[in-house]
Figure (cartoon, rainbow, N blue to C red):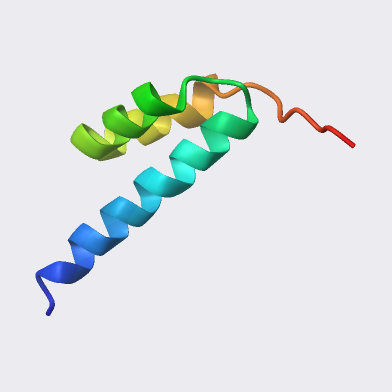
Length: 57
């Protein structure tokens, strides 16, 4: 069970980045793949490069 927790956490982070990238009009597939394969580096780059959130009424 303890080996499964990091995998679940990584998948959760990938899903959250995917959804956030979609709302910010960025390519969610690329960012999701980058965060999956290079978690720490890609997350840092994502938070630096992400665009402002688009608010639609």
